[in-house]
Amino acid sequence: MIFHIITLFPDAFRSYLNESILKRAIDDKKIAVKFYNPRDFTKDKNKRIDRAPYGGGPGMVIQAEPVIRAIASIQAKKSKIIWLTPNGKQFTNQTARKFANKKQDLIIICGRYEGIDARVKSAFGGKVEEISVGPFVLTGGELPAMVIIDAIARQIPGVLGDENSLEENRIASPDVYTRPEVFKYKGKNYRVPKILLSGHHQKIEKWRISKI
Image 1 (cartoon, one colour):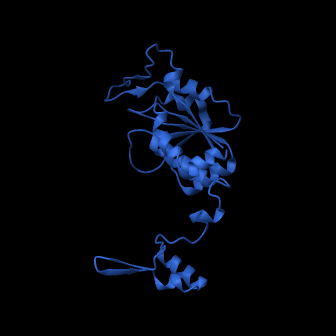
Image 2 (spheres, one colour):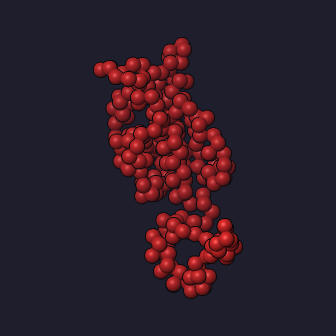
Image 3 (tube, one colour):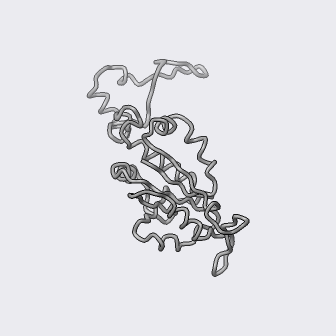
């Protein structure tokens, strides 16, 4: 599965993608992440891609044409365009699973400043899906894009190594414990719940359900 990221700041992704599970998924060719900077698609000699908004207001707006050219340069037979916006449909595990199961390329547009000229959406019609990662506003779309890549990648077979690692597919308590069984901090003993040491799987599952 290929994630095509339209962003002014591709380096913002480097450290996260070069660590742990996502790095392994990229190395194993389970996923690929490609970047497209709108500045590389502008005809402006100074690589400027932002202008003042029509109708007035603070800040600057990213021009439509460089973003449209960036999207048009992506050679993918099947692709979905994700337009990141606080006003979009809430992104969930179900959304992530849907995209993973379709095995289609995803084009994720990361906004900045006051946003991107809305005519980009008009240019690509029904291929654009507006998505939000939460009811809040961030300075750019790079963090939401990383959230989406991570959530979808986990749903792709082989990325986690063991399909049982998907918490949403099993009973997973928000509280987990490991060795040692007891440790002391400031004179107080902290113990693992006895039920987890019992070996009684039905009771353990019941305990986990009670913690959800």
